[in-house]
Length: 120
Image (cartoon, rainbow, N blue to C red; front, side, top):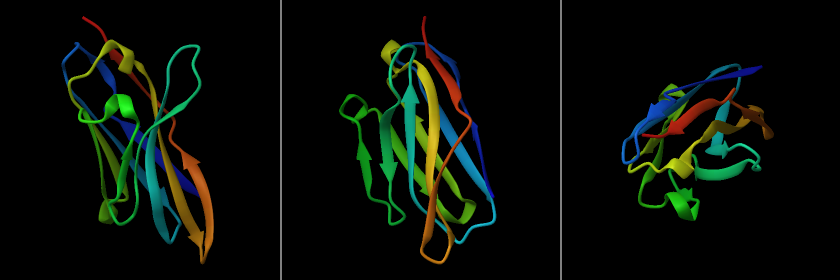
């Protein structure tokens, strides 16, 4: 089994910054793609950013230039540095990991979610 623990959410003023982290623990061989999603009230969960095991990144258009996703493979951790934050970034943020739990056997795991609120 794999457990994900997220941290770093909270209340921030517009223009401010937050850094989210998500740590994976348990029994697995490797972690492939890591990503962050968010879901605001009355909206569907949307992809924010992804990072491959080799470090290739993708971003949703509205966060490009403001958010940075990174990972530490030795620590099984993915980060999301959020700068120049806007009220529309307010949402519950979830990490999402594609885990190789056995040879060539993969499964997706989700974090519990962390609330991010951008307000003055």
